[in-house]
Length: 613
Image (tube, rainbow, N blue to C red; front, side):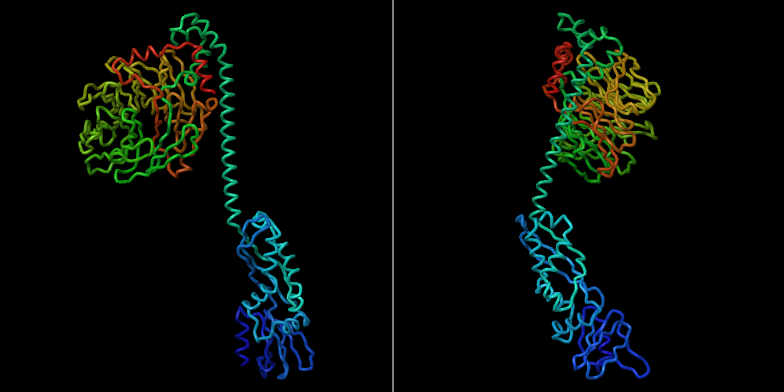
């Protein structure tokens, strides 16, 4: 019997025990003290009682009874579900209340008289007694008296303690129990959470509207300052133009000083009419294509993962000829829709080789996709029959070492670079010409009308004619030129190139001027441009810097791509939309373009004001 008593006291769910004196363990040569976590009250038949703390032997007589009670804090759970708060929201939840009995004979006697109608008092039974006596009601009253926002977000344990003390006053007195504190309290409200989510969404929308308005105001202010700064330049141009409305920029620029020319040229892309406008910026990072809004580049509008069966992605090019994205992979090219990213075709090189790199550029010539790869060479696929695949150039014994920059001319010729030469093929895939740059490895090229522009590994920008002739040095830099975008402003040609720590610059070879177009927080290694946007790729390929014509000054928006996507950028491009039918596809494009190109300086001012509004 005595052994059973000690085992029962080891039960963690037992809070109190009421037994006869002869049930307490006895020994002839030793005593049996009260366990450390317990205290006791010994009662005699005549009503007298004595308190025995932990560590002492109660030594009850056989005709006496003993009450054993835990002397530690006891945790009682209390909770409610779906109670309406004062604001009308439904609140649920609960917490834990810590209670105890004091080491006093009066309190233990009160416990025995009120609760110990049975031999044992368990945690489950005390929890039910506590809740039924008013613990649950106190929590419900607290919820009904307060708004859900306070109950969910603020500290209300002190309020609950006061409510419990008041509601359970009689129960605590009769049982000798003391509420020590409210240990934990967690209340939730699904209806409040839904309301707050709607409020946060509305606040975010308002903040975005305010931010957009701030950007627009900054753009307007910057444009006004720019116009004020250029007012003297425009006055000189108007004076030089006089009554002649057909003068072009080459006729007007000599009237300006070198500093005024530079200031005008760096703003030229903002104050001239737009023919190719950016509708998206697309980049490849990891094994997916990502779309950015050029007016809000920090917002990812679409992410399209591609299968890995063609290998890792290396490049992306937009073809205006067929409105397609050409995505170069290790062993082939993907054709995607620029609007929704849908895969339209899969073009593969029939080889068992596992290249270390990928197709670095692609274009469409005469109904065929042509792409360059430094290990596999230059390949061509039919748009109608992707299995119709031919090699236009394959390296032999690692010669050529680099094959890059596939580009199409307006009249349907293919131009690409192989080491230090520019190769020109006709639409049938026959090589027409190979023009050497005299040892300068070609990194990139671009074609504008009948001119070809080449960027080399030793920092040169070379200009030549498609139909032959010598190369002319348009620019000398210190770092390799990895990209060139040629833009025409009436009768002026601007070459947009990366300029490392200086950001992105415009080269005006005929004028002998280099003007900064965009600055950024990082050194720029590649750049892309259309009439209303400039995009730069950082030296570490970890971020893009995007500058739209609607944004103020030259400071682009930094997009931390590597942090957002977990991958560095392999390549990027601008998806453009023509604001009007272009004459570039017609045989007489040059004459028609020149006819449209003649604008006066006053027309430029009017156009800038139109952009601002």
